[in-house]
Image (tube, rainbow, N blue to C red; front, side, top):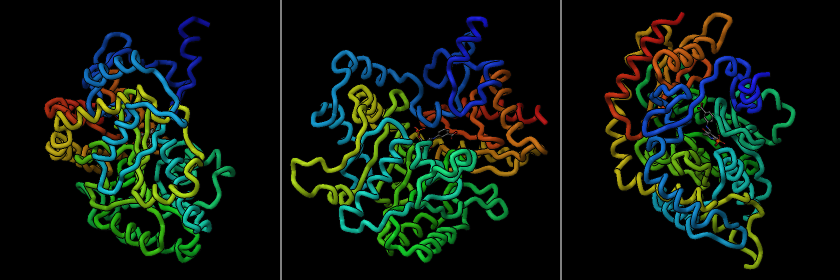
Amino acid sequence: MTPTANRLDAFWMPFTSNRDFKKKPRIITGAQGHYYTADDGTKLYDTFSGLWTSGLGHSHPKIVEAVQKQVAELDFCMTFQMGNDKAFALAERVTRMAPEGFNHCFFTNSGSESVDTALKFALGYHRARGEGSRTRLIGRERGYHGVNFGGMSVGGIVPNRKAFSANLIPGVDHIRHTMNLDKSAFSRGQPATGAHLADDLERLVALHDGSNIAAVIVEPVAGSTGVLPPPVGYLERLREICDQHGILLIFDEVITAFGRLGKPFAAQRFDVMPDIISTAKGLTNGVIPMGAVLVRDHVYEAFMQGPEQMIEIFHGYTYSGHPVAAAAGLAAMDVYEDENIFEGTQALEQTFEDLLHSFADHPHVIDVRNIGLMGAIEMAPRDGAPGARGMEAHKKCFWDEHLVIRNGMDILQFSPFLNANADEMRTSFEAIRRVLDSID
Ligand code: PXG
């Protein structure tokens, strides 16, 4: 085996067709602003902000500086029965940016950990209040909540679940997804119809009795499944049904938090307040892995009972509130605020929407969906080869147009930089059109 082949073989890559990738790898060695650099020196424009992570651009100088300084000053300190200044400061900053009443924040290292933490908080909340019968968790078809056992179980993406079907956590149900190509294809922003799909929650309440249900978890805009904005009135209806039955509502904002919808949180954009919010990605601009779970006061207060010397929740990660990650998060918060990032994002939304919808006439395209700076172009699958067209588009963009795009099967997903340049955005979509024109 050649040293090169050996080098590539050692890394078992996540969510990747390893054998196909390693035949002709796409390897990145640098990133600056809105461009990656490949191992042959080529510069590539990034249409996906990392993996929905890096809205401020790569290697933002203020975040780089904060991380360099922090790692030399305090590299690590446990946060079990001790603390570091940066974690407290970041929790304060994030809760200040959050909707009113979200005054407490628990740190994790990823979106998957945030989701499983949020689910545990929901179960613990009811138990602490003497409603231990509330154990059932409800997710939604096509939802993505990470890959740990809790998140995988409430998730609704079949390939992620099918190999583990017998081992999903018990007591989980799913409401229907909101995708409707017949009625809502090519909607701009929130589809006008579909609020009634939230009533599916009533079906599960009738089946199990509301007193057995702990929480409902949804992405306010489903991301990984190919960008599904909520129909008008849908999230409001979910909130209403949860309130009627004492069920907690969890928004999984791993993608939507920190500006992707032009507001710090999707809860603010839609003006619907959940009880718990899970986040990650944009919290540190993707620079250091970190997630956070935000809870409203009533959730936190439910745990703050019993003898004061007792640990209130037996949950946490070695790296919860890691000082270097927290320093990256603090610098990211500074940039979001000092550079008025969210206003800039709002200003870009229309341009992005128009560019995406210019693909509506393309023969491969069966739907275009968007909201904020989240967008998807769905192509019809080739006969007998689902995913092939999307993957070919991804590879052609990379090799021929020096463009990084993300495809989930035949759906092209876009997550432009929150501070993208409109001309670069336009140029990137011209390149994507050339690619779609060139493939079968
Ligand atoms: N919840 C949501 C809503 C997510 O989007 C996670 C949880 C899990 O986060 P971690 O950090 O554990 O990966 C995510 C992650 C895609 C794609 O192509 C999106 C994610 C992950 C992989 C691919 O859209 N989001």
